[in-house]
Image 1 (cartoon, rainbow, N blue to C red):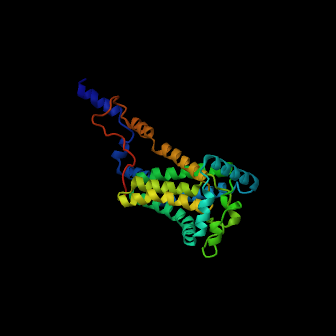
Image 2: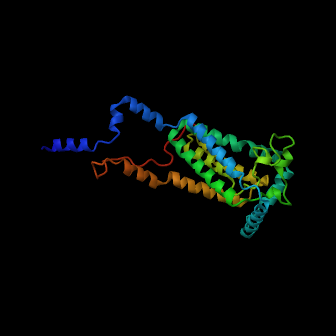
Image 3: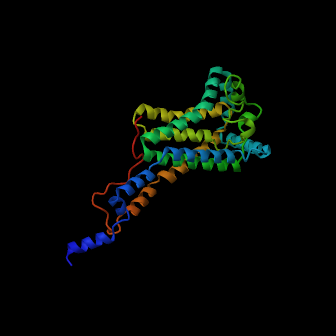
Length: 295
């Protein structure tokens, strides 16, 4: 048997299963359809995640004693670390009504609309980026839910010496006195550690910085989380350590989703079985981000 014949036999024996898809246009179209995120499936998944979020978030809001004990412990720890700035910031915001009003609007609106807007933008302009970004968001939310259940924490606004900015602005705003998106009777007021409010803001800012094309848009993405940090502290809804905790959660989720070892593992799995040597001039694994979106 000649070398050419041996090569043909080897190639035939090691042909990947994907050959059937290349030979059958219908199967190719079906595989392409199933491999792309679909808007109706994404909405269904978001609904399931939100229902899970609402259910688990409200499990830990029954007993106030542990929540107040945890809040006091966090406040004491911050004093020892010299980062307990919540009270002076809250007093300053409360003393400046226009800043208090803007903070209330920011707290109750941008938390939802920016997060949804970034997700929709990525879905329509960068599907590979959307897959990774949505996984980071889901992991962050699920880890935060575990924190709500295991570490119920009373926010600063529930203690003496703080001004409840959201309650004061509820007289003209459309939100509850707590600033919660739902009725207070159905909302866990002790879901403060970690700050999912800041977690979603960090996620949105990171995705804009990673995937936006225009420099000024990336600058806005970089600034947005810090405005949220100021707002949640100024309205007395979170401690500094709530923000630090959720930043760590985001970091863990980013490592899980974007880690180089995942790309290396994928390259090994995609390597043809008929060759042990890498293909010449093979392109390296794509860096973060895979591609920038039109923004």
